[in-house]
Image 1 (cartoon, rainbow, N blue to C red):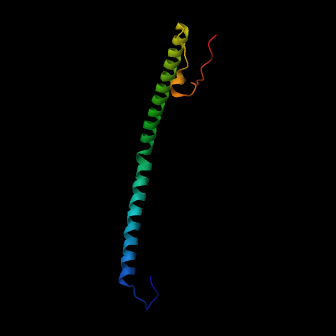
Image 2: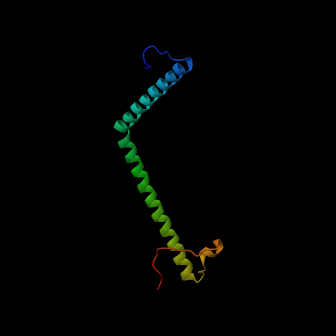
Image 3: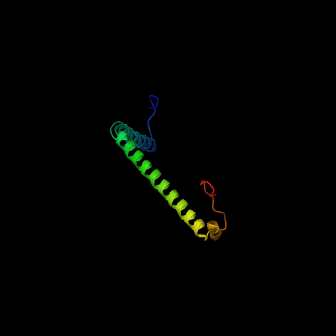
Length: 98
């Protein structure tokens, strides 16, 4: 509030009105966020955990299939540098073949 005896100009009043509208919207968003945190966060966390586990499984299966493919190539004598087509060597964490 302005000190007594001073009046707001039209621009100042409009600015304060806009600030009040923004404050009300922020309060609404805060309420929605609190509601989501109370009600939906646990379900969302469980869903994301399930997706994470499935992704880890797919990654493991993919790596093992690549390993099997490379093992098969080496066993048949067709082994060549798989990274040569891309200009960089192929790197893996798999143990070397004896």
